[in-house]
Length: 83
Image (cartoon, one colour):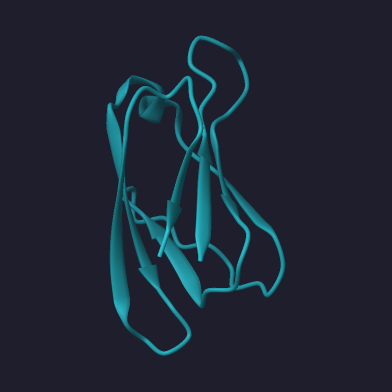
């Protein structure tokens, strides 16, 4: 699975977490559930993520196992995590 975090530090654009493969659901650190989709899925993140140096994403995949992904780094760059 490939997850791409796009940050837009200092700009008006909202950072987005882009799903490029199927999972059952996403739960962001803000406990905001996202709808299940089999295609590309984009979730808007809250503005306080602009000022965080990392983000924790809890993912429950199609077989029910839980994966925790830490994405570190400044929010003005994109990070990819492959699991």
